Image (tube, rainbow, N blue to C red; front, side):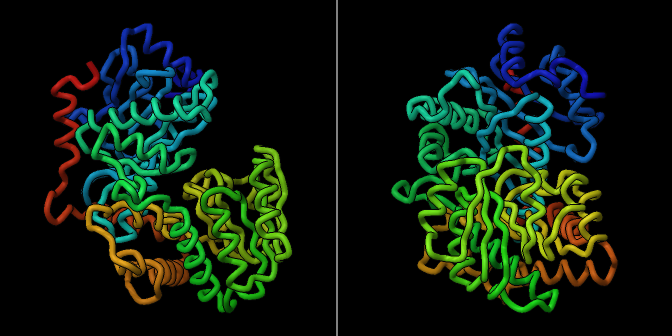
Length: 438
């Protein structure tokens, strides 16, 4: 259906008010096992299910979507489960501002699907999912007490959906937040090392981006990172350590930007005296993407590569940490390919966050081979060899690298877990049958 229904076009807070008016605190959108049609748990919310089912590139047979209003602070919280053939859905919980319910839903759908591809291509026995919390503008998100309430409530959501999705850290969320989730559920990762977790995955994620850059330059016959110019969009959790790693690798120049004045100032202080410059930009400023560089590294929000920006790019390689960098995966992948810009698929190179935390239950080893093999040059599923394999197939077939990587990941994502099989749909059906939404 067209995105004109008020449930879709209004803000997430308006949806919260609608749910309150219906006497609901929870709802879900789940496929009917007989027909495959997406069905809302309450008939008044069926327009949401109809919109999602018609969401085109963003909806690909997701197994279940679960939502609640937080017990405190009237915040819309969601869990998006895409595909669980390889295991429980795994992916971080994002805390972000959304203008409309459409924006909120599309982001969750797209991010969950991206996690399916990321986990499969990394050789992890996990499916794909994502958590999304929509910021309530009336709530002070920097208040520690408010954050503790919100993340405890999100932990309760995880427990209530019985482990079909296991959450982790993502944009807008920190390790302290994950610890509050852990107070209410076992179905989380990225908790503090003091509690037995792996902590903040930002540094390993940055290392993975560097590995992707090196593979891309090798494929192009362009040598190493030494002497190159790299543009880094976003100086936050991943962009910050990435800058340091690139400087240590001998790049000639780094041009960074961020929308946060404090982060820009801190980065300038931290890297003073080194070949680094940082610019404060407006949230909707796309002109910075036209920076002349060897490698462009999007490390902020997604959908930055689109028909407005791709014609203006002046980079040989795009390789960054941001999820869903392509606004339209097929269209924009093809546009980059036609321009001769080598795109390193984001779900291939930014895997290290989930790699670091997904198997916390396996325990920890110094210089852990379960982690380090992803960053070396030898393991077949490691970032370097996986990227070179994608580039080689892309060159041989003429298909863009993103399309090539998605096809490889899709095939892997349908392999059943060797012990549990495809268990997610049974968990979800049990939730529906037991009246989870009330």
